[in-house]
Image (cartoon, rainbow, N blue to C red):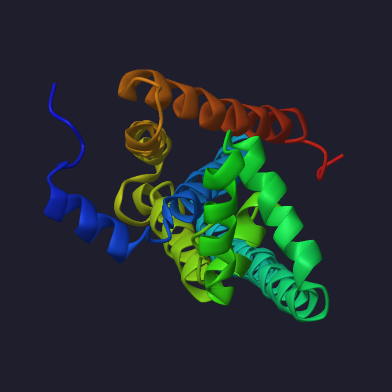
Length: 242
């Protein structure tokens, strides 16, 4: 079996000194699935209500713009909150170290003891960690507060979500722009199903689930949402005329 990375001395040194990079896959998958689901749900609801293709396009484009911006803004705010909270905790730890260094050293001592160190080894590790304030604070952030060692950029998170939402959300609308009205829905269903399955399969690269199982899971979720919207539109198709 081929390993994911090399374990030579130089390769390990390079990997550790470079550090882990933020991963924006979650933002892309989140935006892509929601874009395809919500837009196709609108398409299915409008078709179920027997409305015209123009209504599909108008409502679909409105959803792409409004919901895409809303999701991007929400993701930006959520990620920014995480970043701000990390900075708050960092400032707090610097203040605690300045005002009560022995208490903070005892926290490091207990953290390392919980990892199995004791005696001189424990004391040497505490001394090594607390000799560098930046390393000291980084240890407290991860071990005491559970903060991640990588920090995602709020704007990149937002842009990843928005781009995926617009790209994947455009797929159900394209057939109504380029295809005859009678063929638009079957084509939209086929293309959107492919998008659902592709996103799920891509997601499996960062999970233990097999690619086809992850793809089918995402496909089922998307089709259930679209089917619900179609059923509501179909059941209420005569409501406006009543």
